[in-house]
Image (cartoon, rainbow, N blue to C red):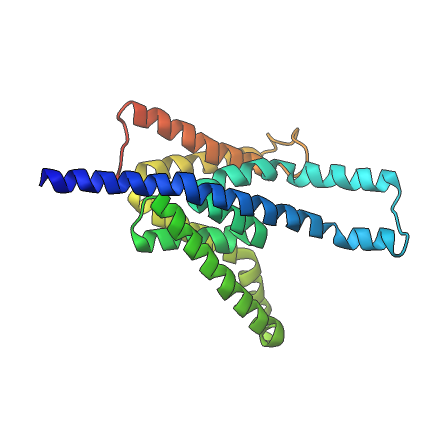
Length: 246
């Protein structure tokens, strides 16, 4: 029995070493390359306008556009990678930010795959399963988009206006609600902390307490809910007030 346990621990260490020494460096190498390539290609249309047609906006317009975008979305460039990473994992983060639709497709697919495989989030096993779940969602997404572009756009437009509004306005909140219920079932105390912080932050936003922040201050709610939950949960865990609720 002791020999089997020793062999199992050795196998576990070997798996962890393969993950850290081979898988992660490989993913980082190609993840950086593909994402940087995507950044370069994003400037493709602007470069064509400049090099082929000689069209260049005034410097003031370019600077104003940059300031507007940074003011509206700059905070999300920091908040989203940090808040999504624990669920997406290393490779899943590269894939999700490259393919897009993170909140309404990649994150739910990653979470559902790890739940179905019964692996712990933040572990090498969870990272691998997250990769498979996100990869599957990308292929399915491309297939559905192709079918949708060819035939379902007219069907959607034929739906009653009430149904169209429901799909456009409440689809993403419904998906996040399902994810919250999924993890809240396993970690009810942490879920209660997150829900309370989000509720208070939304009240503060509604009453204008974040009006001094640049751009759309909705990101303040995300910062408070995500990082507040992390710090409070860690503080409670260190004092034995919460643990593995599973």
